[in-house]
Image (cartoon, rainbow, N blue to C red):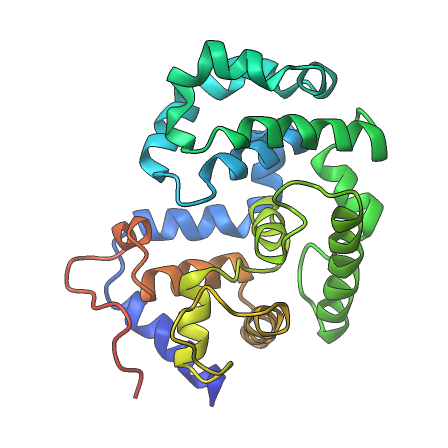
Length: 267
Protein backbone atom coordinates (compact mmCIF):
# COMPACT_ATOMS: atom_id res chain seq x y z
CA UNK A 1 0.00 0.00 0.00
CA UNK A 2 2.79 2.44 0.93
CA UNK A 3 4.77 1.40 -2.16
CA UNK A 4 1.69 2.12 -4.30
CA UNK A 5 1.62 5.65 -2.88
CA UNK A 6 5.30 6.10 -3.74
CA UNK A 7 4.46 4.97 -7.29
CA UNK A 8 1.69 7.58 -7.48
CA UNK A 9 4.06 10.32 -6.28
CA UNK A 10 6.42 9.48 -9.12
CA UNK A 11 3.53 9.39 -11.60
CA UNK A 12 2.29 12.83 -10.50
CA UNK A 13 5.77 14.35 -10.72
CA UNK A 14 6.55 12.65 -14.05
CA UNK A 15 3.36 14.08 -15.55
CA UNK A 16 4.68 17.61 -14.95
CA UNK A 17 8.41 17.12 -15.51
CA UNK A 18 10.37 20.09 -16.74
CA UNK A 19 12.73 18.41 -19.18
CA UNK A 20 15.60 18.28 -19.95
CA UNK A 21 16.27 19.78 -16.49
CA UNK A 22 14.56 16.95 -14.59
CA UNK A 23 16.22 14.18 -16.62
CA UNK A 24 19.64 15.81 -16.25
CA UNK A 25 19.21 15.95 -12.47
CA UNK A 26 18.15 12.29 -12.36
CA UNK A 27 21.19 11.33 -14.43
CA UNK A 28 23.46 13.30 -12.09
CA UNK A 29 21.93 11.65 -9.01
CA UNK A 30 22.37 8.21 -10.56
CA UNK A 31 26.12 8.86 -10.68
CA UNK A 32 26.42 10.96 -7.55
CA UNK A 33 29.25 9.01 -5.89
CA UNK A 34 31.52 9.25 -8.94
CA UNK A 35 30.42 12.81 -9.71
CA UNK A 36 31.05 14.02 -6.17
CA UNK A 37 34.53 12.50 -6.02
CA UNK A 38 35.35 14.32 -9.25
CA UNK A 39 33.66 17.67 -8.51
CA UNK A 40 34.94 17.87 -4.93
CA UNK A 41 38.40 16.56 -5.80
CA UNK A 42 37.80 13.62 -3.43
CA UNK A 43 38.05 16.09 -0.52
CA UNK A 44 35.97 14.94 2.44
CA UNK A 45 36.46 18.15 4.43
CA UNK A 46 35.26 20.28 1.49
CA UNK A 47 31.94 18.42 1.41
CA UNK A 48 31.51 18.66 5.19
CA UNK A 49 32.18 22.41 5.07
CA UNK A 50 29.75 23.03 2.22
CA UNK A 51 26.89 21.19 3.91
CA UNK A 52 27.56 23.15 7.11
CA UNK A 53 27.38 26.34 5.04
CA UNK A 54 23.91 25.37 3.76
CA UNK A 55 22.62 24.21 7.17
CA UNK A 56 20.38 26.04 9.67
CA UNK A 57 18.14 27.45 6.95
CA UNK A 58 20.86 29.54 5.34
CA UNK A 59 19.53 31.00 2.05
CA UNK A 60 20.60 28.38 -0.47
CA UNK A 61 20.72 30.82 -3.39
CA UNK A 62 23.06 33.19 -1.51
CA UNK A 63 25.25 30.33 -0.25
CA UNK A 64 25.42 28.98 -3.78
CA UNK A 65 26.55 32.36 -5.10
CA UNK A 66 29.24 32.56 -2.42
CA UNK A 67 30.53 29.07 -3.24
CA UNK A 68 30.53 29.67 -6.99
CA UNK A 69 32.46 32.91 -6.45
CA UNK A 70 35.22 30.84 -4.80
CA UNK A 71 34.98 32.65 -1.46
CA UNK A 72 34.86 29.48 0.67
CA UNK A 73 37.69 27.93 -1.32
CA UNK A 74 39.89 31.00 -0.74
CA UNK A 75 39.07 31.51 2.94
CA UNK A 76 39.62 27.82 3.77
CA UNK A 77 42.82 27.37 1.72
CA UNK A 78 41.31 24.98 -0.85
CA UNK A 79 40.32 22.80 2.12
CA UNK A 80 43.83 21.58 2.74
CA UNK A 81 43.21 19.66 5.96
CA UNK A 82 46.29 20.65 7.99
CA UNK A 83 46.07 24.31 6.97
CA UNK A 84 42.39 24.54 7.92
CA UNK A 85 43.07 22.73 11.21
CA UNK A 86 45.64 25.40 12.11
CA UNK A 87 43.36 28.33 11.24
CA UNK A 88 42.10 30.77 13.87
CA UNK A 89 38.32 31.26 13.67
CA UNK A 90 38.59 34.77 15.11
CA UNK A 91 41.04 35.72 12.38
CA UNK A 92 38.58 34.56 9.71
CA UNK A 93 35.65 36.32 11.37
CA UNK A 94 37.56 39.59 11.73
CA UNK A 95 38.85 39.60 8.17
CA UNK A 96 36.41 37.62 6.04
CA UNK A 97 32.95 37.64 7.60
CA UNK A 98 31.67 40.33 5.21
CA UNK A 99 32.11 37.81 2.38
CA UNK A 100 30.72 34.87 4.37
CA UNK A 101 27.47 36.33 5.71
CA UNK A 102 25.34 34.08 3.50
CA UNK A 103 26.01 31.14 5.85
CA UNK A 104 24.05 33.06 8.56
CA UNK A 105 25.88 31.94 11.72
CA UNK A 106 29.43 32.81 12.75
CA UNK A 107 29.68 29.60 14.80
CA UNK A 108 29.93 27.64 11.54
CA UNK A 109 33.46 28.93 10.95
CA UNK A 110 34.70 27.39 14.19
CA UNK A 111 32.73 24.21 13.49
CA UNK A 112 34.51 23.70 10.15
CA UNK A 113 37.91 24.18 11.79
CA UNK A 114 36.96 21.71 14.54
CA UNK A 115 35.91 19.18 11.86
CA UNK A 116 39.36 19.52 10.28
CA UNK A 117 41.09 18.98 13.62
CA UNK A 118 38.98 15.92 14.45
CA UNK A 119 39.67 14.34 11.06
CA UNK A 120 43.39 14.99 11.56
CA UNK A 121 43.35 13.58 15.10
CA UNK A 122 41.13 10.53 14.66
CA UNK A 123 41.62 9.60 11.02
CA UNK A 124 44.50 10.96 8.96
CA UNK A 125 45.40 13.90 6.78
CA UNK A 126 44.72 11.86 3.64
CA UNK A 127 41.14 11.00 4.67
CA UNK A 128 39.21 11.22 1.40
CA UNK A 129 35.63 10.55 0.30
CA UNK A 130 36.83 7.13 -0.86
CA UNK A 131 38.40 6.58 2.57
CA UNK A 132 34.92 6.69 4.12
CA UNK A 133 33.77 3.97 1.72
CA UNK A 134 36.85 1.81 2.35
CA UNK A 135 36.94 2.27 6.13
CA UNK A 136 33.29 1.48 6.80
CA UNK A 137 32.23 -0.60 3.81
CA UNK A 138 28.96 1.26 3.37
CA UNK A 139 27.11 -0.15 0.35
CA UNK A 140 27.13 2.28 -2.58
CA UNK A 141 24.08 0.61 -4.10
CA UNK A 142 21.19 -1.50 -2.86
CA UNK A 143 21.11 -4.93 -4.49
CA UNK A 144 19.30 -6.87 -1.76
CA UNK A 145 17.87 -6.60 1.75
CA UNK A 146 21.26 -7.37 3.31
CA UNK A 147 22.63 -4.18 1.75
CA UNK A 148 20.01 -2.18 3.66
CA UNK A 149 20.86 -4.04 6.87
CA UNK A 150 24.55 -3.44 6.29
CA UNK A 151 23.96 0.25 5.54
CA UNK A 152 22.32 0.80 8.93
CA UNK A 153 24.90 -1.29 10.75
CA UNK A 154 27.71 0.85 9.33
CA UNK A 155 25.71 4.05 9.75
CA UNK A 156 25.30 3.38 13.47
CA UNK A 157 29.06 2.80 13.79
CA UNK A 158 29.84 6.14 12.12
CA UNK A 159 27.17 7.97 14.12
CA UNK A 160 28.49 6.60 17.43
CA UNK A 161 32.06 7.50 16.45
CA UNK A 162 31.08 11.04 15.51
CA UNK A 163 29.09 11.38 18.74
CA UNK A 164 32.03 10.06 20.76
CA UNK A 165 34.49 12.56 19.28
CA UNK A 166 31.83 15.31 19.29
CA UNK A 167 31.97 16.03 15.55
CA UNK A 168 30.10 19.30 14.92
CA UNK A 169 26.84 18.90 12.99
CA UNK A 170 27.56 15.32 11.89
CA UNK A 171 26.91 13.76 15.30
CA UNK A 172 23.25 14.36 14.39
CA UNK A 173 21.37 11.63 12.49
CA UNK A 174 19.71 13.97 9.97
CA UNK A 175 22.91 15.82 9.07
CA UNK A 176 24.95 12.62 8.85
CA UNK A 177 22.38 11.08 6.49
CA UNK A 178 22.51 14.31 4.45
CA UNK A 179 26.30 13.94 4.22
CA UNK A 180 26.03 10.31 3.07
CA UNK A 181 23.28 11.20 0.56
CA UNK A 182 25.40 14.03 -0.85
CA UNK A 183 28.38 11.70 -1.16
CA UNK A 184 26.30 9.22 -3.16
CA UNK A 185 25.42 6.55 -0.61
CA UNK A 186 21.93 4.97 -0.80
CA UNK A 187 19.86 7.02 1.63
CA UNK A 188 17.82 10.21 1.88
CA UNK A 189 17.96 13.10 4.33
CA UNK A 190 14.98 12.82 6.73
CA UNK A 191 14.34 16.55 6.75
CA UNK A 192 11.10 18.47 7.23
CA UNK A 193 9.67 17.60 3.81
CA UNK A 194 10.62 13.90 3.80
CA UNK A 195 9.15 13.47 7.29
CA UNK A 196 6.01 15.40 6.36
CA UNK A 197 5.42 13.19 3.30
CA UNK A 198 6.23 10.05 5.34
CA UNK A 199 3.62 11.02 7.93
CA UNK A 200 1.08 11.79 5.20
CA UNK A 201 1.64 8.31 3.76
CA UNK A 202 1.25 6.61 7.14
CA UNK A 203 4.85 5.39 7.40
CA UNK A 204 5.09 7.20 10.75
CA UNK A 205 2.53 8.87 12.98
CA UNK A 206 1.89 12.49 12.17
CA UNK A 207 3.00 15.31 14.44
CA UNK A 208 2.05 18.97 14.59
CA UNK A 209 5.71 19.89 14.14
CA UNK A 210 7.52 17.80 11.52
CA UNK A 211 10.89 18.86 12.92
CA UNK A 212 10.33 16.96 16.20
CA UNK A 213 10.57 13.34 15.05
CA UNK A 214 12.98 11.13 16.98
CA UNK A 215 15.85 8.99 15.66
CA UNK A 216 13.71 5.83 15.47
CA UNK A 217 11.03 7.57 13.40
CA UNK A 218 13.56 9.16 11.05
CA UNK A 219 15.29 5.82 10.53
CA UNK A 220 11.95 4.15 9.80
CA UNK A 221 11.12 6.75 7.15
CA UNK A 222 14.50 6.40 5.44
CA UNK A 223 14.50 2.60 5.62
CA UNK A 224 11.01 2.41 4.08
CA UNK A 225 12.20 4.61 1.21
CA UNK A 226 15.26 2.37 0.78
CA UNK A 227 13.04 -0.74 0.67
CA UNK A 228 10.83 0.89 -1.95
CA UNK A 229 13.86 1.87 -4.03
CA UNK A 230 15.19 -1.69 -3.85
CA UNK A 231 11.85 -3.07 -5.05
CA UNK A 232 11.66 -0.61 -7.97
CA UNK A 233 15.35 -0.55 -8.88
CA UNK A 234 15.65 3.20 -8.35
CA UNK A 235 18.39 4.99 -6.42
CA UNK A 236 17.35 6.66 -3.13
CA UNK A 237 18.97 9.92 -4.34
CA UNK A 238 16.55 9.91 -7.29
CA UNK A 239 13.57 9.12 -5.05
CA UNK A 240 14.73 11.97 -2.81
CA UNK A 241 14.24 14.30 -5.80
CA UNK A 242 10.69 13.04 -6.33
CA UNK A 243 9.88 13.52 -2.63
CA UNK A 244 11.31 17.05 -2.54
CA UNK A 245 9.31 18.03 -5.62
CA UNK A 246 6.14 16.40 -4.33
CA UNK A 247 6.63 17.99 -0.90
CA UNK A 248 6.95 21.40 -2.50
CA UNK A 249 10.54 22.31 -1.67
CA UNK A 250 11.08 25.73 -3.21
CA UNK A 251 14.33 24.89 -5.01
CA UNK A 252 13.02 21.51 -6.25
CA UNK A 253 9.93 22.98 -7.96
CA UNK A 254 12.10 24.22 -10.83
CA UNK A 255 12.12 20.57 -12.03
CA UNK A 256 8.37 20.62 -12.78
CA UNK A 257 6.07 22.96 -14.69
CA UNK A 258 3.72 25.49 -13.02
CA UNK A 259 0.78 23.07 -13.33
CA UNK A 260 2.24 20.84 -10.62
CA UNK A 261 0.38 20.81 -7.30
CA UNK A 262 2.58 19.80 -4.32
CA UNK A 263 1.21 17.43 -1.68
CA UNK A 264 -1.82 16.64 -3.86
CA UNK A 265 -4.10 13.70 -3.15
CA UNK A 266 -2.66 10.24 -3.93
CA UNK A 267 -5.95 8.37 -4.11
